[in-house]
Length: 583
Image (tube, rainbow, N blue to C red):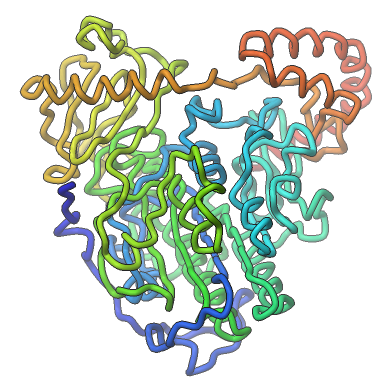
């Protein structure tokens, strides 16, 4: 398979490989040691399976890292990537829940029922309980497993919680977005609750601590208290940053005070806090004896959101779209165990590939990854061999708004082009339906946000329902071959038909009023009681329509109880409204 690098911008503005001076009074600072800043000089040591540190950021765009960007500085991430392997042909999903579900299961979202949207806080939905997760497999292989940060895979009953899905410990938020200091999460203007949990209890004592700092300190504590020689360690650090709201301590924003765009300035400060956090974690890996037998993986969960300071230039589109700007991710691997380091990899890699890759690194056999959609890509990353992956199903979402111009006739009688779908096969990428906002959005360097730069690359074209691009030669998706190469369009549509036959029903239930945090002391908590679990399990065996019907019937039994509970919680609701308005 022919793939090429994103030349011209993939190595743009590579920063100095030395670290900056550090303020010892920083709340996220560790002591410095001249010996910890020399990457690449350590000989690998592998007396046991490697320690795995997987770091995921939220909403960080393709142009939001130093080695791609001219306005955001990330010296730590740049240095780790420079001494490791940069993944420049790496794909994720366009929004939060799908990327996280595919990382955890190694399966496309059409095979878990999560192919539409995200899991909202009040939805009785979560990562399917019949799926064996990556941390569960690693536990079977003798790993200690820890998660720190954002979950966003559902929590309506306790079986859905991280500590029931393979993690020995957990500190973080269960919903998709919280205040970085108060940990308040709002699902609409009038439904707010506290969302910071330690294990399966509410972590009130951490309120007021900046989440990037809090999560970093937790990782350092895990590293300090675990014996690296007695048991391999897996840490999934899922930063809330750099998702909205745009919040960070002032000292991280000050270096960007010359940036005229206020949102970009705040966003850059948040990225800077993440960069510092990764430095401190890397230091701890060395200090406590993990580094020589460790694998550090850095990944975003989806493309950046320009309306909130992110940027994917020069790629097309943004978060929530199937253009490259929504699904081509930042990613790199840093490890002394890499055979060929200090290079850029153009091997095709997808977020589902981490599951089989890490299970194999941990000593698992092929029976532990049978039936997955991911591939073991370690040799492609470590030894610069050809990727075993030739195609990626980006998604098929039958519930997304259908394109009015789409039809079965437009799909040559085999595929309805009104349906939102996207697939890449070799160098070719097909999109059908409504792929989402499809402009190219330049970096936000102008002061007027957003009107003065939003229209710089406006793109208008007749109503369409199918597009075809050669991503190897045109990663910016500027030349559409759909009319010139109907033969390739047909072949890729045939692959969509194949995958669609394997899809499970979409699981996107109605919101449940019992989830209202005012009914549980102002906290987002699981709301389905143990007495209800047997009925819920029976519902899981039904198709989606039957499940929603049964669940709605179950909800009706609670209406009288809800009226009474809501009356008793009037004061708490008023307090939540005041807090929401403040946010």
